[in-house]
Image (tube, rainbow, N blue to C red; front, side):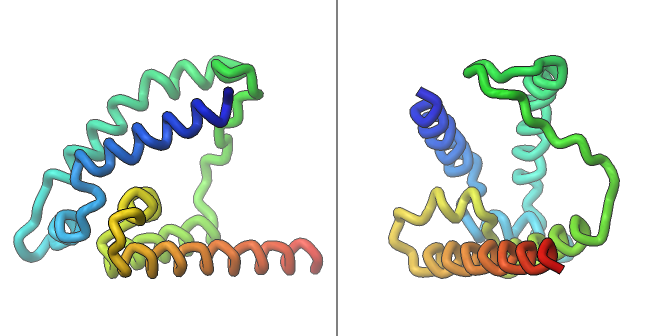
Amino acid sequence: MGKLIALIAGLIFGLGLLLAGMANPAKVLGFLDLAGAWDPSLALVMVAAIAVAVLPFTWAKRQSRSLLGAPMQLPNKRGLDRRLLIGSLLFGIGWGIAGICPGPAVAILLTGHWQALLFVLAMLAGMGLFELLERRGSQA
């Protein structure tokens, strides 16, 4: 049942990304182009997403178990560290170069665009490199 719920949630998330235009690299790059023809519509999408998420996250903080009975697992770390800053910087650079981030990349993967496939392959390679470095770091 949990996997079915995850599939449905993923499909709704992907549909939302497509409807909001977040899977359109030109729209994303227009949002990032502060010095040129800036397109603020993506900022409105982000603000709306945060507004929609506030109530469920507030509720979730007070729960010990999810609606499906699994233990509630919310991040508790609040501080900034070197790993977070470097990861955010790399994410932002990739987003700025490609005009796409991981969620939309997966959503448009089925469109057959080779750029989406290349992005997803690079993303998976980065995840693999991170995992390798994490294992090395824990063994040291």
